[in-house]
Amino acid sequence: MTPIGLAHLTLLRLSPPELVAVAAQAGYDFVGVRVKAVTTGEQQYPMEPGSPMSKETLRRLDDTGLEVRDIEFLTVGATTGPADWKPALDAGAALGARTLSVVGTDTDRSRLIDTLAALAADAHPLGIRPTLEPISYQPVATVTEAARIAGAAGIALLVDALHVQRGGSTVDDVRALDPALVPVLQLCDAPLEVPAHLELPADLPLGMTADGSVRQIEARARRRAVGEGELPLAALVAAAPAGTPLSVEVPDALRAARCTDLDIARHQLAATRTLLAGVAR
Image 1 (tube, rainbow, N blue to C red):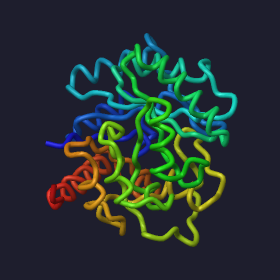
Image 2: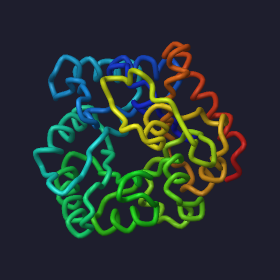
Image 3: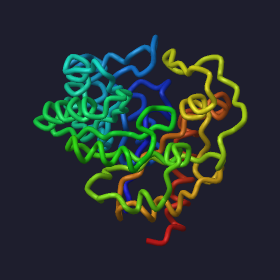
Image 4: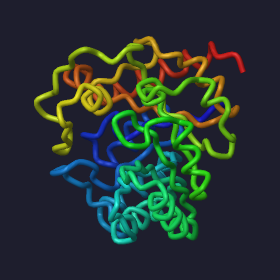
């Protein structure tokens, strides 16, 4: 069976221990946890090793049998260094995390590779592998470019269905990847074309922000559940290495306003299982 996990961004309003409880009740195999704030002004869950929230998360993991497969999110810019990533790595290591999601915003490719290599060196002893995510509105936007950088830095790749489409990558680009570079595939759905306009929700979880661009609003708050859009998800899953774990990352402010957290988690999982049932491998 392909492991299916619940990415924290899907239900960011839940604290990590609450996320574990809801994911377990819904039937997921693992969760992703945000241990580092991403946007300016965003609140951060207090997940330092030994903190009450970290301990409670561990207790619920033990009680439910779920695991934390990935942690997020590190933005790697021109001045990013160990002081930026060590707290996140320590928080993740306490949870038994395997990967740390990163995005490259440094336009100096040589420096970016060196920084990612230094991050990898600090992460390796903790059993964590950085995964570079190509994001359509960031300097590293395509799967192919991200794979070159990740390979040079000795890290992995985080493939996200939305950003594959929005960044101009293709299913063939994913199929061409070295299987060792792809420890997880993030799923959501969306229209094939970038929407002409999307309303920015009045309140985003934890004070998260978007700059108003349609791509940011869509990625952070207006994704669709698997099967509710037009992305070639079956082909994408078939192109990934067999058995690649799937992480459901579907922040949907409209659904969140009318549904309970458990209903959302169950709906996303059911939709993903339906997709898997129809994928020819």
